Length: 420
Image 1: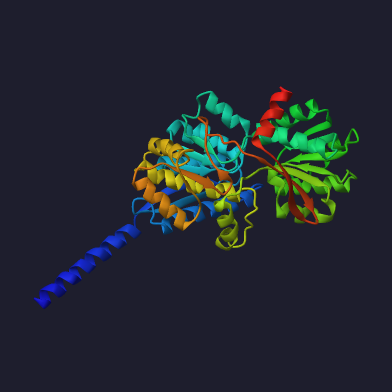
Image 2: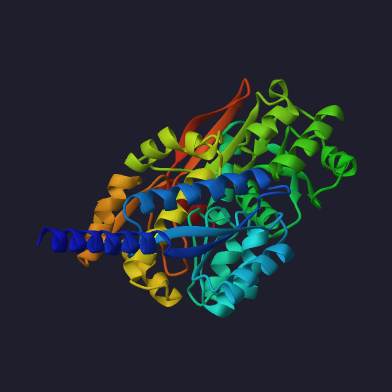
């Protein structure tokens, strides 16, 4: 009898061990197309680590249907054509149900129009803010599969115009990157700025990755501006700013959200940026914000949680992971619908981290709604995959970015309606 019991115990142990091994080998792969190199490389590296952190937290909480969430990460090199090739491989060959990315609009848009939209595969961008993405949804060209965890530049342009006027920057030259993001940001800002009484004395587009921008800066200096509004990315932006300073341009700047970057500040020199102002898509701090700020730098190997793409990339990963759990399958249509279920305004509040995700997975298993309240605040999407949120107003002081104010969504929407 004892020998029989021992055999049974051994056999049961082997079965359990085999089950555990099988669970450990069970992966659900999500595609990441991130700008790991190129002008937006700083953002993509931060974004990729944030998604990995969110997936790691969900996996530590028990995973999705006993499986681990894993990423298949591809480098877009900050180029749309390379991003399309990478996304095509992920969707057509790897058969991923979701693609997270890109960071910049000139990467996300071609992925959406050429790959994920036609294939009806969910795409979530953490930081692509172009109004074109909303327009594509309204025109029925996205099949409802696109979502983003950042507000549209149509609103940020209004916030930036008001902030510029409030700082006395009433006569600007504008240099902007000649892509979908830069063109739209310039257009939305200019409309609001001029309506508020500001004067634009020069408007100069530039093409990326040039060794010199001296001719663009020379054109922008024409008209004796008070300051430069620089719509750019950290690498090119630093080259432009250095040229602006060396050619005698006023050391006053208005900057877009992506220029909130330690690399940009270090490359230009903190002494030249003490009158540099900027706007970013803001946050409503939650318990998730506290968790992320306390843990991200160690997880990422030294990337600051203030990196513009970091916080909202964690939320993109968390929402995707919870939606896959709520969908009950890896069917993209079910995941698309489940994104609304895990951000249900009437659901049980859920925050970032292992313990909270354990609670979330239990509620999902019981068929109950949840409301993920993310690092950037409570997130909810409209039918075009857009969110609304506040805007952070910041200033560079002694090489550090300081938040000096906020414009609420209601403030921006009210101002926009008054300017129309």
